[in-house]
Structures are given as structure tokens and as C-alpha cells.
Image (cartoon, rainbow, N blue to C red; front, side, top):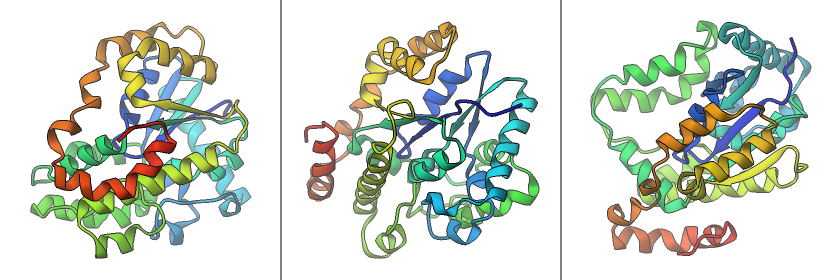
Length: 286
């Protein structure tokens, strides 16, 4: 078995990547693997401690072989012929991914940064206790000897268990560790979104059109049939009825505007200077 035209769903965290992954997984031929961070940092653990960025030079034949082998094993386990990877942080590893898979189909989900920030703050305030469901979801398809890749995230897991507020969540672009030390959470997450989108769009737009497509979350949930059709054509997916049915039955356009009722004027004023230029570049109005 060979990995052909693997689909990668990437984007800033809280951008709808999980929903899109579930939609594509409805297809009888597509197996969607969630949160495969352990694969990408295999052989690069020193960089795992610093953040999510990997570049083409971080590849060697052993790493490439390990990733390909892991994808094949997952497909055999799921009894499906085509892989879809849903790992938001891969938006900071686009050159690395295409070095491993030159025929990759990379879908960058773009969402209004204010919505991302609002959703992230809700994540930070999640209830106290052991997040068994999430831990099981992330670890059940990860070999025990690769659990080390999650070690840098253990601090946030411990805070959740003991009921302390989290100070960070999601993608880790360069600079994130210093931001946490210097700024309040809403500033940190504004910077996080900007730097994540800056790197993702810069690297993605260097690729041929056959490799990279940008999809806007707001359009996706407002007009799922039309936007899913674009994804299906780009990813070369045949017989997509099950994907379309799921998307039509689960898309919730109200999610696009919830930030308006949640973010207060002080927060919006603070983050505007940080986010507005990138939002404008992506076609959003403040």
C-alpha cells in the first residue's frame, strides 16, 4: 500500500477543523486521523519543546519512512484506502508535510480571529477534573513509546485536573512562550492567531494550486453544500454524498457570530491593533 493524495486539514485551533474532519470521515474510503502531533515530532523531540514549527530541513529518510509507515498502519486498522490528517498545528509545518508527501492536499481553514479568540477563552475556562474523553481520543491511536510527544502539553493537563486556569492553548508559533510571560490571555491569543495565520498563508501560498486550498469557516457553515463542493473537487474525492449529507445536517451558521455577544469592548479595543491588519489581509472587516 502507498499513501496517495493524503488530505491535511489545518488551521488555527478552534477554526472548525474537527467538524470538517468528521464530515470527510463520513466517506467510506476516508480515514481521518486526529491530532497526530506524535508523528510529526518523531525524531525532532528537541523542537517539540519549542513549538509547532517544522521545516523541510527537519526531514531525514528515517523520519519520512516512519510517518509513511504510521499512516499505512492506520489505514489498515481502519480498513480504508485514503488518509485524512486533522492536526491544526500542521499549518505551521506545511513545508515539512509537502517534503514527505509531495502530492498532499492541504486545506487551510480560516476563521475570524475574534471568533477564534472567543472560543479559545471558553476552552481556558473548562471545568475542573481529568479530561478523560479528550485524553483517550488523543492517545488511543498513539503507540505508548510515542507518548513522549505529549510531554510539553502535560503542564496544561495538570492545570485542568487541579482546576487552575490555563494560560495557553492551541497552536504554538514562534514567540508564544514569551507572550505568556508578558501579556494577559486575550493579547496572547490575538498574537497567536496573527502569527499562526501569517506563517500558514505565507507557506501555503507558495505551493501549486493542486496542493493548497483556503476555505473560510464562515462560508463553510453558511453555505456548506457549495463550500464542500470546492473541497471535494480540490481533494479529488469521488462519490461525496455522505460528506454532503453530514455537512448539511450539522452546519450551524450561528457559530460565526457568537463572539459579538461574548467579547467586551475593552477586549476588542485591546486586540484590534494586533489583529486588524491580518484580518484585513484575509478579507475580514473589523
